Length: 426
Image (cartoon, rainbow, N blue to C red; front, side, top):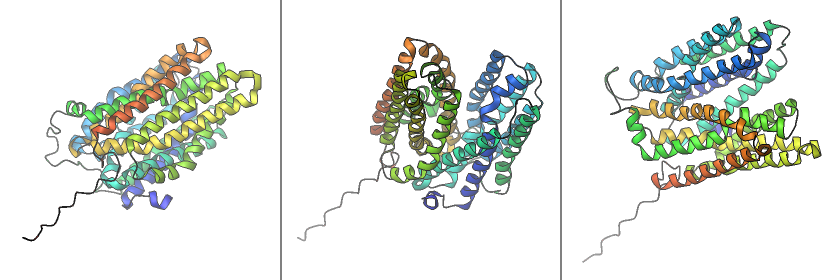
């Protein structure tokens, strides 16, 4: 299955290798930024939260500019400096010693990361054919999670709050990991150039983001993504953790095991899911994702009803929720970028991918802000009802998208052309 999921072109395979290596570095630091800023560098909890929120806001604000630059100058000229800026900013976290320096470093990291995801998706789209693109995006997501899992396990055995040098070491290693995809891209001089014909620097796309927003199928896909990620992805970091600890009353260690189970589910099942989804409706797959996410939250809600009455069963419910959610992710990860690039034109491909990545940024602001008050109402029952209802509503939106797509865009086999009857001899 792995061999079948690999892209045909060796350049795309090397890009995927860069994703894996940089993800290992990202996994080294991903779980520890808040702990590092508060317990090691002495920032208060509210200030550390503001720093992390500022990073998300700057990234979201700059993402549209990144898409425009990708279309105008090519993904290569945007991704390479972005990776360098990201490496400098991540390495500078090792030197943070005040709130002001933390905000400055977070700004640098946000500038770098604002165009990396959309740029890399654009590069992969240019190196893959329509019939393999969905498989490649799914494999890219599996490698990303595998790298983050390996990095997280490694840093968990290294870091020690009593020894700040251990945190400095993992941030420097993370910085070096961002250079690996940059080096790989430098060895591929013909990859990542501007896709649309014309003179570089000239205006392209006939309206830019306005043209993208006038694309009715893509607009419907964006609405689906906002509803699903607000009630799905955006709840994992805040809503899921808060409900598990405060309502189900499990320990943080159980939450850590649940997130590990989520990663394990993605790594083990992604290739199988990719294979099963070939030739099937993409909008149908998106509708199933909403139902799977809703099932995950219902499982967590059931664990909350059990609570301390049976601590073991409640803990298993929390772990099962994260694992079920991970299975839904394996269906969303190949379909969403594949459908985005099926709708995109070469002139506006960077903008399409930038808007698709902005979905996660917008929901990442809405989700955490609303999770706290909802969990505090009626022992979390209101929160469970809202996120389950939102995921099911996203499924209905996905089904409404199908009539707006051609069979090829939807990933279904095209209907055979009607045969012309042979003429009857006079």
